[in-house]
Image 1: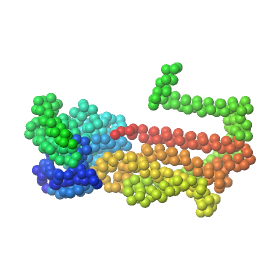
Image 2 (image 1 turned 90 degrees about the vertical axis):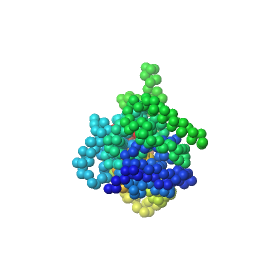
Image 3 (image 1 turned 60 degrees about the vertical axis):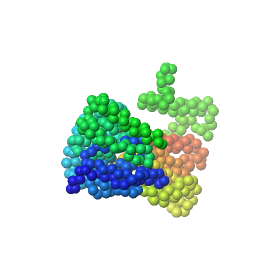
Image 4 (image 1 turned 30 degrees about the vertical axis):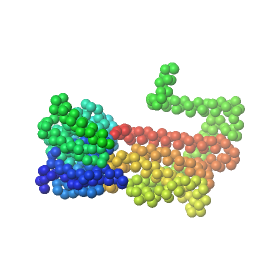
Amino acid sequence: MNERLQDYLVFDQVTKRFGGLTVVEAPFNLVVPRGQFVVFLGPSGCGKTTLMRMVGGLDEATTGTIRLEGSPVGPPDERRGMVFQSYSSFPWLTVLQNIAFGMRYRRDLSPKAKASRARHYLDLVGLSDFGDAYPSRISGGMRQRVAIARTLAAGSDVLLMDEPFGALDAQRREQLQIELRRIQSEEMKTVLFVTHDVEEAIFLADRIIVFSSRPARIIDDIDVTAELGSDRNLELRDSEVFFRRRADILRTVRSTLTLV
Amino acid sequence: MSGALHSAFAFRGSLSRRKRVAVALGSSFFILLVWQIASWVGLLDPIFLPSPLDILGTLYDMTARGEIIGNALISLGRIMAAFLLSAVMAIPIGMLMSSYRPISAALEPIIDFIRYLPIPALIPISIIWFGVGEETKIFLLWLGTFFQLVLLVVDDANRVPNEYVEVARTLGARPYEILRDIIWRSMLPGLINNLRITLGWCWTYLILAEIVAADNGLGYVIWTARRYMKTDEVMAGVFVIGIIGLVTDQAMRAGHTWLFRDQGTSR
């Protein structure tokens, strides 16, 4: 296997048009090292989701290429897992079956291995007691945990998360953010996380890419870990450095919004 | 009392199962009662509309003479055969139309064209093609349901959230696996509901088919009774159809609720 740590995921001169609508105009370049938690922050409809979907193979770049471990990304596969904001778990399957569904199309695992992996990730996301419950019987936060566990069980190295906590209340959100950071660092996953919530971005990210409104353009690239360290906990949320960062980013975001 | 009435009539409110059944039975009974009284006091001429009790008596006699159960089973058999044929064809075709644009582009005009044709207008051609045997009846029933059902299936499949499909794709599912594991499972509750509604339409076309070309079945019973102005027998036949419809519909509803009791409406 190719050990590309620094240029693990590369956006090379990427542009995107949907018919007459230009989503990404100026060639988009970004290099993401392996294991980095990258947050795409920007106004709704700015094209950040489209960029993420192109990594997943759900959309194709109009020009330019996206490379994962040195080779251009093709159609979707289990190396790149998606977690959506809603309809993220299948209502006709139990929680455990939902997680096991992540491995349904993998032929390299025995049924026994699949079952024990599903158990493992059920426990990892803290749903041990809810394995037999159906999604309609659990909270929205738990459903997002199911989706995360399913992606991990599938063996995805890259997690593509499109506002996964957008529909949750503040407490559940905070709790899941801490969990996600823990899981991401334990499992050494590379994460692309789309949000328009500045606090969420700072709390989760190793690195924040701030986008302009459409067509998407990078207006800031912030190394959060250099400033806040990699250990994220609730105290951080109340710290002065956190608030200063938040104010800075909000100023940047506002300055671009006035251009529209 | 007025408080209970007020809460029962809350806008888009809820009603317990027991109360719902009570209200449903009560309203049916009330209509029958009014009808019966109107007959007793001579407001209704029995030649035009016999009283509920007379109809019930006639129904009993007809059943005893063996005119009801056999014919009802024949009618039911025709409906099940035609309905299964429609469903078995409409479900895969509808799912494919929803999944592949060229297929829907090719089939939609044909389906829409036939869908708007009045079935009675097609009876002559059907008799020319199939004679007056079972084939004609099945064909007319199929004609009346398939083209409606296939569009309902397309709609059910279209309403499967794209997120489900995309999650499956990123997990390595191929198109036929997505159809089998995602589209089919996700659309099933809506599909079964639509099957229930379409089954009701079958009866419309069945009676039509049995009036034109049959020597058995409930439609034949009704049509023959009409010839001799036996209004009570006509009404008895109609009553049997209504009861069969009511029972199958309620049974399918209950089955639906039981089958999908765990799914709810989760995002």
